[in-house]
Length: 292
Ligand code: MN
Ligand code: MN
Image 1 (tube, rainbow, N blue to C red):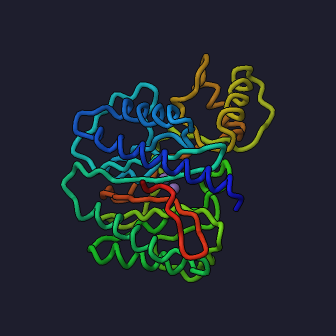
Image 2: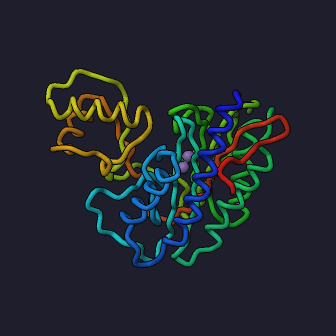
Image 3: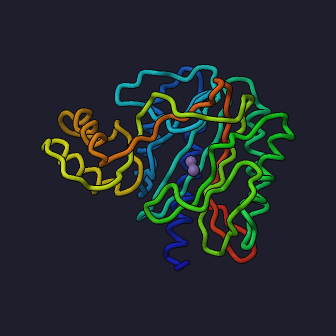
């Protein structure tokens, strides 16, 4: 990896760690989700970077992909809060998440956090992702919980917030061998339910797929806006500015210009915790970019 590229990954990671440190204390019963999301995204921009994806604030059974809509009025209750934040510098992404438990389940929160630490100890060139997945599963089961088996960690690359390789959260038959220069996000999810998630009928996050001919002028304008501002990184419906953007967005969805990232929730309605760091694989192990 070029030195300048590594520096951008490191800088993005440090900004993200600072942002999460400040955001954590703002998660409390009665606080507004929309205000927190705006705070996090504005703080990223004020530090000279940009959100790599909308600030995800997923509660309780929601494991991932909730971000407040433009008129969201909801406030935190006694919930298990997953705060999952992405930062990019020139397209080089840092991705990290913490669980702030307001629900009184500290051991469930600890299970995903401990699994992440165990995984980080293992990560090195030549190590199979299968070994990492097995260690994550074993650690979470040691706490008496289950990993969410159909959510995984992933590779990161320029303007790609979710790429190869897949980093499983359970034992798998065939893994991928990690190599020097790989950038990956490891993100164990633990649950007191079945360990499966499915798509919920809630969509606030979208991403660009491909340019296609669209008739509606507002939709054409929106397509241009999305391509220029977000490239292939996910964006929030809340971020779109202009006239009739919701209607234009639905046209782009129908034409296949954009795709949705629906909220992913635990199928039985059980609680889910998450912990995540981004790492760069180096000769003697890994460098965690998202730790202060
Ligand atoms: Mn994440
Ligand atoms: Mn991730």
